[in-house]
Length: 308
Image (cartoon, rainbow, N blue to C red; front, top):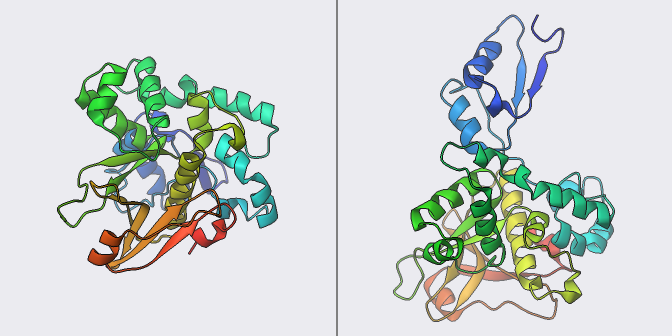
């Protein structure tokens, strides 16, 4: 017996095992032992390519993100959450980091944001320069919540636009960053092909720009809060198996909303403001052209209203 009397088998970093798809298929198809298999990997592009075809009809896929607020609430409470929300914007929510003292959090984040963060990418056949990846990620880190120009990034990093697009795609597939595209029904003044990029974990973002300052000493609090809330909403939708399409919305004359969700033909709109004194306002052109019932303004004191 390959695994003794064990019937549940977990394989971490499964993408590094040669012929992993065929191996998992052979184990799974052992009717006598009836194994249940968990195969995890830190990158989606490699693992998916190696297991998808052999395991067609035999697998269920899950994405494991940094801890969400709802997951933390299974062990904490809202009082703890409100007391620690600023720390999550600075140090992120990787499981190893949440309960560490501040100095240890920084050391751990420095390790995660080192070449360890890029190990799957650097194993990829055509990528050998971690310096280019670091420059690209730092440029994105300084532009969270803003429109990103591939050509501008190419100029900053010193590589071609197609190379930037390839790197961005791979960084998304390794769950370092994610993007929102612009929502449009082809109204003349809407942005149609723009993208915004965010980090799944803000601790990694802050490590890349070497800024662990408290919010009172920062100029990017609004961007941090927007990133945090967008990521939380996407994690919530995924974990609750909500089929919702997520976008940002903006016009050429500057009207915008941070997050627009479409579900069953209905539209929800969110604005993220760290300060409770600031209220989001539904842009007139959005209200006139789309069936939007209300705008949800989420600040740090009503964060619970994000989860529905």
